Amino acid sequence: MRRWLAFVLIAVLLVGVPATARPMAVATCSVKNARTGAITHTLQAAVNATLDRDTLLIKGTCIGKTAIRSKSDYQVLRLKGVPTTEQPTPTLDGGGIGRVLAVYATTVLRDLTITNGFTTGRGGGIRFTGEGAKLSLKGDTSVTGNTAGYGGGISAEFSAGFTPVIVMHDSSSVSGNTAGYGGGIYNGWHTGLDIYDSSSVTGNTAVRGGGIYAFYSFLSLYDSSSVSGNTAGEVGGGIVNDTGVLYVCSDLVAISPNDPDDPPETLPCP
Image 1 (cartoon, helix red, strand yellow):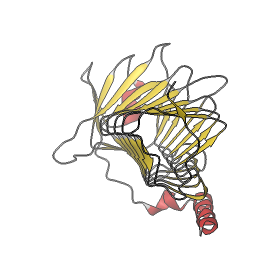
Image 2: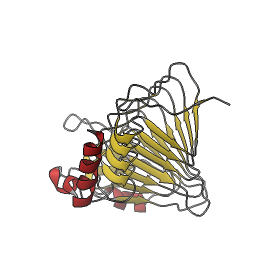
Image 3: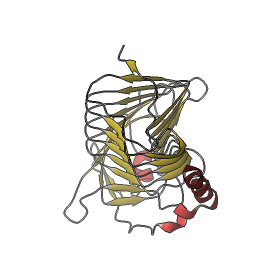
Image 4: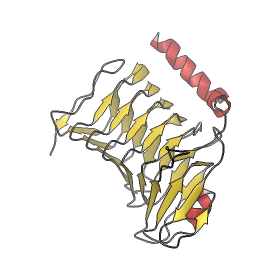
């Protein structure tokens, strides 16, 4: 059964079915720079006009690919979803034809849904890398319904010695994503992943590492965070810890059940 699932997953990635299976959402994107008051109707245009520590207020559904690059040594950009009566779920949508976000600078995502991203490479929802950068998911941020070769929801890895960090806070979630390695998150090459509060990685599917595939990296779970309800075709229903370190820092942390339910060895918090 698992080998059959692995074959199906690989076939889906190669033929690119997810890129055409989901209809594109209706574009109703409004992005306001909280500092300047300027409003644009594409996220990339708004990002291009930001300065350090700006906050972008996002309403509706913004479709397309967006790159966030550092403009200074201490670049911080905040993207915050603003619900409306007409569109209560502010959304960044990849349109099924590319990853949603490519992040190269410290970025905070709050109360946003990142969805419908597709790539045969890394990071269907978000690909994150950058020198000394940090990616924070806060509030009700959800990375869901994305597909990639590595890291269906999020892929993070260093570049030329960089050490980026991903932090999940509050009730943020990575769910319902698909990949070859790391259905929810691929965490590789000196990247740190810290999961706090009631944040969760759940309902993701991969050949290896249904929830998380950690390669030569650091993973720490705190509070009542969870990695559960994920599925792998071969190994690591919840987490594959490949030459990395996994810390469990609370008795309330859940890394089971998953399918297969084969949690890796863990260490107590240092």
